[in-house]
Length: 123
Length: 123
Image (cartoon, rainbow over all chains, first blue to last red):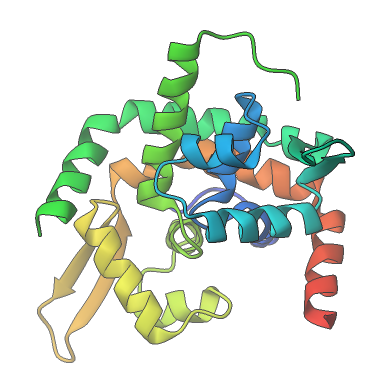
């Protein structure tokens, strides 16, 4: 790849920004949870059903981390039985351009990626 | 978050695309490795020095996975001592819009993220 024609300082700043972003939203599940929440799933069970392959324990941990990081708000409704609902914050909604870029990239390469997935599964 | 005004089918397709993209480039290191390679680091030791906190074992595994997934090419130069260099493929270069979106988001929220990182470290 041709080295980009930007200053070394700009380059380091970009690397740091990307690293920062990945610190908050990196890993296997966080963006998937954000997408599922933005689809209108707000209850724990709905989220688990929507997100393929996530266990209750992992989902619970991820939601706790996301709450601590300010990505989701957890609402507890004082009724019987107690209802809990999760909601995206403004902060996580600002991730929309990242999700759009991932959506476009995934769409552009879906055939190639599916082939890779099959190859891994068959090995 | 207000539910987006798109059809359920479009929504599922986006979810699948994003999931596909994250299958290839998800996890803690892959995007960082891509950024480091695009900065002009092509040797294993340069990559390890540039990417904060990655061990030789993890870097080696990630590069193998990325080679298998078509994100990088590994060149072996027939000289003494043998030289190995890694290069991004066209396929991984098409990730630029994703990296730009992450760069912008990280830049927009760097103060908030740094506070979160400090909080985690101090706990």
